[in-house]
Length: 214
Image (tube, rainbow, N blue to C red; front, side, top):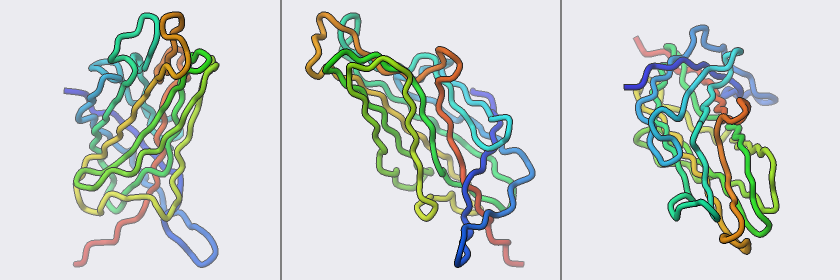
């Protein structure tokens, strides 16, 4: 059983006025996140960790073996890797939350003609998944990469107030040979913790829940 991990997050407002977005009061308590399950070829047991940012505005997932690879030394199944995180977020009374944005970071080494891909979607238990947000890379490429998924305030999906629903995050990495020569080159895309700065950060938007009727 994975340990409960602590995280607290806040970025965008959910209360609208005629002229501006006005943020609700922030929770004074930290948010406890229980990692219920971690499944996927890119996040085998013991290879993914969750931590809270010092300023309590986001939580971060760090990977140690999340790499999609093609070419010399790669197995046929290495071209696609995925990870699903199932989280239970303990929210202070009077609040709910939704995903407002995600920052993905990694490294890629792609031969000329090869391509890489990162994509993700999110959903609460019992709801339909959001559409995948996809980002692509083209070789030749050898550098760190960073992609950001931003969700418009009006499109943020919030957990229903007063209901216990786990939150699911699905991510995927792919590498493709394209026009490169797989017998002479190796191409890969990774999302991991090689240099301590390659990680994925999830930002939450807070919203006040209505007070229960007496």
